[in-house]
Length: 454
Image (cartoon, rainbow, N blue to C red; front, side, top):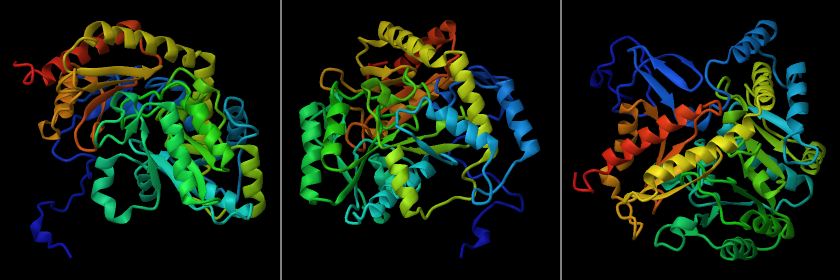
């Protein structure tokens, strides 16, 4: 038991912060791409929060739909009722999902969706009489969530490290990360033949009929900084999975709903996975919602065999209403195409300013998912030592310039490595894209000035 005298909490409650050691401003209101704090400062949300907000902040129609649905029915348990909102959303969502005859299981977020997908994988194989398929393979340098199962699946070593004693259920293959391919401790490859061959060797070594699924992000998000795999990677990986009866699970939590300039990341390669996991942009942050979409044959097998699973707040009726309105906005305002065009513009602006910067290793991404990898030496690609906390300095310097960015660390070798990710709302204007590029440029220069002799 903790001795209460050892704390200075007093009688009042307090918020357990996401990160210790920071004094955060109080956000007061938001609209479009801008967040306004109570102290009078405004911030351009170049990260969409955590690469979440796609239709923009302060959408009145979304708030109105949310309120109207909550006034009619705010909650009904998913074992007792369905609703018009849920059924309509699933039907409209099915029109854009890259799966055949999909069935949608809505939950409260990305981590829950990954946990649900893993259980679906198991339920599917059990229903088919293949209970020996227990092994799930993911990649190093991936991120699939922070619940223990999702964290174990993830290959983001800084997040895994404190909890390693509780992990070890899943297996990992190399990241599809051309920039750091073959480097010591990078756990990365860049050649399609090598990447597909490695996955096949792991499947074969595990033994016939033992591997259940392969789970991966189509384009890696914050863990590696918007890394696009080499051409041909996804068709080759899909072929390996099909030949060995391994389910292909696409984690589209960050890449879905137009973030990469297509409805879903796998659309860039024409891939149709067995299961697709999404969240974040599904509701643009207006409601905590994620889902797993299962292709028809997967759903039919699970329906026949049964599915032991559920969450109190799954199948949310207001969540479905909000997601449906966000989907309407994305469609009617052609915001997926906007993401593609504005992403190209942002990449061009950054390249004009930073392509030759001695501490910018690579500028990369698709659509409005853009990453910058910061290095100590451009020629050798050597990372800054983690102890120098360059990422934190860069985020702080960008914030001082009124620009909010998303960050990642440990990408080079599991400890060292600095990067930022940009993912503004799709309604970002050209003037705001220029402001983002200018703010990031100034932040990079400030954060790397010591190494440059400043």
